[in-house]
Amino acid sequence: MQQHLFVYGTLGPNKPNAHILEAIAGTWNKGSVKGLLKEAGWGAELGFPGLMLSPDGQTIDGYMFSSEQLDTLWNSLDEFEGSEYQRVLT
Image 1 (tube, rainbow, N blue to C red):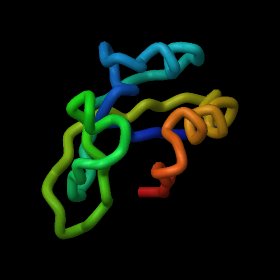
Image 2: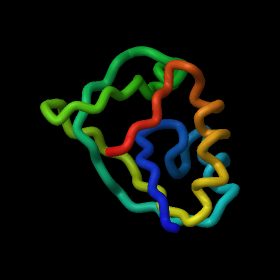
Image 3: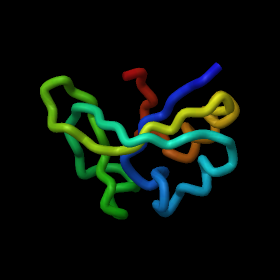
């Protein structure tokens, strides 16, 4: 089953941690979500602040990664992002 992951930071194409998603086959498309950026988390040091989804927030541009193999990476992605990260459906 095709699954999707929105990324706006270090996991995106040509970003410092893109290699993590390169381990599985998939496609990239530009995308966006509404939210608020928060200067917190380890990614903030790299210019990628935390994201809190909010329908009243600003448009946050990023990428949608689509793959039938994402289910093999969910646990690894959660561990990679750390305890401050919370994966949510959008």
